[in-house]
Length: 185
Length: 295
Image (tube, rainbow over all chains, first blue to last red):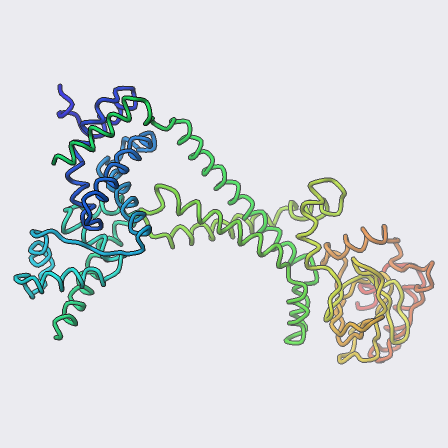
């Protein structure tokens, strides 16, 4: 059995037992996913790289703090989430950045009815997402762009699963309202 | 992708060189145990302080002031055990904060945990209030032992000299005046401005709660409630702690206060008044006289 066949939780147990090399497998599994998530908050590639590296360092240092009966992905996403927020606090700004394909995902899944065909549409969508507030923005990003389940979002954001659903629903409504204002409707 | 590969290389280099190490599992264990112990300790102290708070309300003169109506409100506020209430609140906040920090608390809305926590503290505190633990702690506060010195401020906080209310034991009753012992000192009470007539004569040895105004050297009484000795153990213990044990007769006859003096209001029938006088002369204590003469 190779390292790639093992579950995250099994890998963590083996690393804790002394097989440090297996942490490379953890990094390979999560670097793209976490990088994708962190790009929502950090646009500069150098800055993003530093934050991502810090996430893996912190995760390694605190491996004994992870409960192997829980999902590792939620745990490491929580570390990334906290690290991203710390970085934003340092810069005193909370700005959201979307990648090209993500405009369409938001348009389709949230059913905005405005389309994201032009550069102006994209800027409007980013502006509206930046206006809705952290409380609603985070669950929306994790649900629609990172395709996390309510349970996982609950673990990452430390919110009751029932509240996650409510926040996503309200976030969509608020997002639509901001877009209506931006389009002058 | 190249960058990502670099990250893996850099992190693994740090791990392999020994510069990056796992934090010991004992640190996490200690954190968990520490938080758990702090939670249990703050919860138990919150229960204890809630119980002491209820005991203070029941065993001091505090709630008696509310029986005077709106005029007693200020005296009630003056005698309120703020230090106890603040300490109780602090322990509840600490327990709530630990719940919020725990791994499990976010699964349900935080308000559910707070409601549960408050319900537990109130229930357990009320049950504890039915035992004699609070009274034993209060008596301990009068001792000079370290535990007593620690708990004393919580009881003393509501008892200092107040401007609108007094509670204590009568040691001398005269026409239009009383001298009472409070947990702080002896006080002279001016009865000339009583707004409501007394229901029975005031005798040395009786405990009273008085509403009025503090002046420089005396206290002008507006209304007086007679209270049985057992209703205000905190005041009784305070007076006893300051002035020594009470005499059985209920009156402190040695200081000249033991003569029954009829009240100026003349509210008693002559036969009741005579009964009280005889009873007092027979050396019975005031509560026994009350029972005998009001039958």
